[in-house]
Image 1: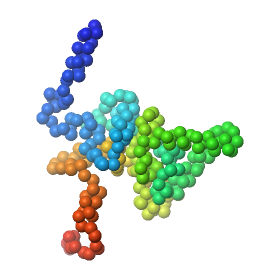
Image 2: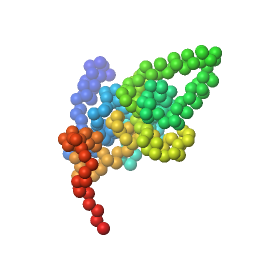
Image 3: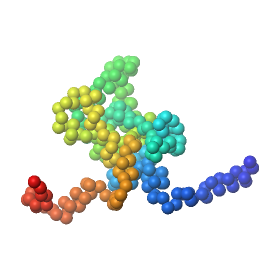
Image 4: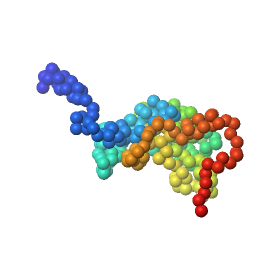
Length: 253
């Protein structure tokens, strides 16, 4: 193929519009790949870094039922849904972000596991005690330097800059209030059930394949607002609030 023919082929490829003719007239949420992947949920707390990080996470993750096609954007639908398998990098986040995370969201089990991880790392480093401590601090500062978003978030909800596949991680929340209400958390395995992947607070979708709401049928209107936005607006309009009974809820016998 000559250079001119090659350029012509590229131009023809780029001139094809999206969606294709066969998809016109079909609801957008059934044909738009971005909506199928991310849903329609976008919030004010998301950042450009997290948009880019999740895009790279989809690209780098294995896909489909057979977990193939890493570093490709071709998805293999399963029962009409496109799926991929993202990493969480919880251990790396604990090592990198825990020392500077919010004190009021550090559970004792996190602290215990963090100290255990440091001892494990120190045991694998040659040298004196001071050399080991200095090496650990150097590594922590190195990884912490790749923080993309921290703000007031706890350590597991912070994000790395997508500078490497090892820094790409799905969104995970720590359900701190719920964890404090239960006294059954004695070790890391007990704490696992309080890490949630379905909250979508900061990234567009979280990468967990939960698309039930986005795929719901029937009448629905996506306002783009969050429950917290509605609550804040209500407080602003009705401040100061009092505890009087308004009688808006009734019970039937």
